[in-house]
Length: 127
Image (cartoon, rainbow, N blue to C red):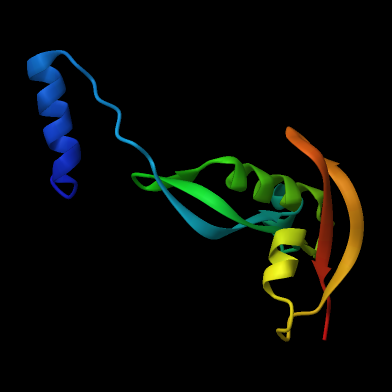
């Protein structure tokens, strides 16, 4: 707790006054990467693990040692749409890397659980 003196002071203030102030979350623009080990239980006994990953860039809330917000949820949903061995990104990420050496192939648009609208997804292509 002493690494975060503001948090300690907030707890002391709450104890003394009975009033709990919630700090405004800090927001930053970030790219969020989610990964999943496909069939992790079965793969635990083997060396060559198959992963799937999802990327999205958006505003995230910094919460002590964690992050939150809709961008985090979207990245998780993009990852869930990836096939084993595939890295998917949202169109936002694709738009940010235009002109780079990163090759992305369209995987069409789809609904993401709990997120409004349809989202165009792209797979990182082998070079």
